[in-house]
Length: 129
Image (cartoon, rainbow, N blue to C red; front, top):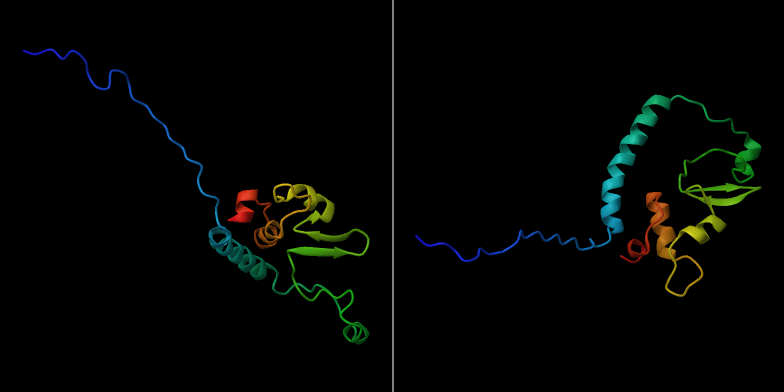
């Protein structure tokens, strides 16, 4: 009968390696979000398809569609008092929230593009993916 002098490994081996996953690409994120948004819109339209959202006069139509609700735009809102908002954020809020290039002071255009398409403020890595 032989008795092992030691067993390998001589201690419980527990190694956890968690590499940082690569940033999710915009294409991948949109592939996740588009079906969800399409279903949301489908349900909304089914519930409200006969809802009247305004009246239009000939003067308004000839005047450049001023004050006419004629299109659903969820990415931005232009308010005559407050200015433009992108996905609910004002420009000063976005200047603080969106990722900037190293050493830069203004947001990356790719970060704003990500926000407009997804409604989410991206990380620096996502904006550069």
